[in-house]
Each structure stands twice: as structure tokens, then as C-alpha cells.
Length: 136
Length: 117
Image (cartoon, rainbow over all chains, first blue to last red; front, side, top):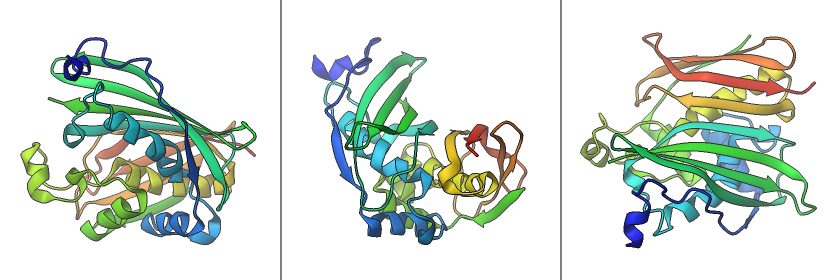
């Protein structure tokens, strides 16, 4: 039964996953900067949010048996990041993911996954909104 | 106007997979990618967006000023594709963003960028 839930009309919309702490290791942020051709001296690249925000939480969705996401058939269709500020190397942030919507139509499944990232004082850092399309 | 032109390589896509932790085989394994109906491996949308963010940050006057970035991953980018990323201030803290491949086809569409001064 549970394996059919994700493919159903309602899917896992509204599901919230436990918060995840993520330490922004300077070496990792620098390696990310080099991979996109940025200068590590410019600090944590803005789209390192793909790691500390989206990347810290999306595995919870992909590993959720009720969500039943076929990772290999998943395409990242769009992405939005909104930053209150950009984190600094060495900082630890907390990210919490939530399935904002989960709709299937015409053999395609559309999952909107939102992540809120905050600092240790609870102040907002980044908000991520990803649309995943899973082809059947 | 800030602009950067990149020819994507398999090595760069693999390096991005390592650095980002996104190891979806559609970005790493040609044979696998074909089994799910793709022409072969494709670049991560987030790698394209990372490059877009760099030119956006440049146009905004620094990465710390970037407040919002939205991209729709509309066109597939495969190794060998050359993509030009462009950003320019469009007034009131908004950026005009464009990313087109060597055939002048947009690869990122509906892009939105906002920055603070």
C-alpha cells in the first residue's frame, strides 16, 4: 500500500521532514566554487544553497518510501533561491524540507519541494523552492 | 552587461557531481542516461544555474547582493554545448538574465534575478 501512495493523486503533499544541520566546510565550499569556475576567495557561492539547503534535505524526500520517487527518472525542472543573506565558510545552518505539492497528470509527476534554511539564532538565511518532474 | 561563455565538458559535469553531491546517473553514465530516453549524459541544471549566478552576482556588484534567483531548466545541455550566460541590471534591483546555447536556443528560461544595493 505505502508504495502506491506516492503515485496516487495526493502523493505526499504537505509532508515535512526533520530539520538537518549542515556545516559549511570551507574546503567543500571552495571545491564547489572551483567546479563552477568561481573564485573561492569570493566566499560561499550563492548556489552552494544547492548543497546546504536543497542538497541537505532532498535526500529525505528521495529516501522516503511513501514518496516513492524514482530518482533515476527525476528531472530538476526549475529552481528558485531567495536569500536573506549568504552564509560564511565554517558556519552551521539548519535546513528543513517540505513537500509543498505533489501532483500527477498525464503520466508525469510534479513535486514541489521547499526548504527553509536558518542560522543558529533562527534567523532566515535561504529559502529554496525546487520543482521535480518524475517521468513514468 | 556581465557575460561568460562556457563549453561544457564531461569532466566539468563529473566535477560538479562531486562538489555538489548530486550523483544522479543521468549526469554521469551515458549508457544509463540512454535507458531513460536521454541522448547521453546531461549537465546538471544546477551547474548551469551556478554559472548564471556568477554573472548575476557580477552584474549586481557582488555575490552578497544577490537576493533572489529563479531559473527554469528548459533546454538540455550536453557535453560539447557552448552556453553564453548574460546578466545586466534592469532597474529597481532587478536583473535581466539570459542563457543561450551555440544554436541561440535558450537553455534557461523565465530567469529572474533580484539584488539589494
